[in-house]
Amino acid sequence: MKIKKLLLPMFGLGLALAVAQPAAAGTEVSVAADTVQADVVTVKVENRNWLDMRIYAIVGGFAHRLGTVGSFGSEEFTLRKGWIGPSDVIRMVAVPIGSRAVNYAQEVLVVPGDYVEYRIENSLALSFVAKY
Image (tube, helix red, strand yellow):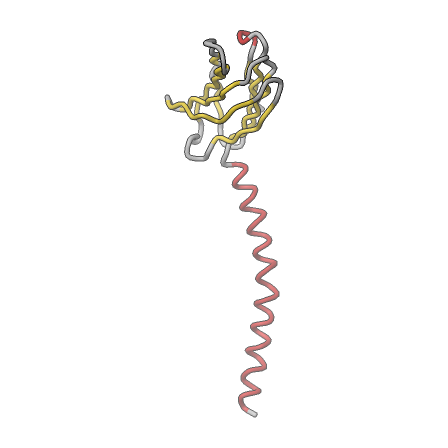
């Protein structure tokens, strides 16, 4: 009889904790997802050139290869959290596959959470970077 009196409150406490835990976990996940997006810089590259391009981001003097964008295609890349400080200057670089020409875009000051668009034109000299 005494065991039942002890177990009933313990069971109620365990049930209350089990119901409350998923609600708290859902809140943590959404906050974590917002924080992750704010810690990175997203770069959209739109290639309007006849050639495929290898894309690099120069941050703090180091070139980081982001990937390849096909001819008349577009891709989104993420600059990792460790690459960007509280505020950093980045310079986008496009290297055509099959050509010796290289496009160095103008430098852009970015902070985590920014969205950068790099448009590569058919004439590389007309390419540009915009930050939102």
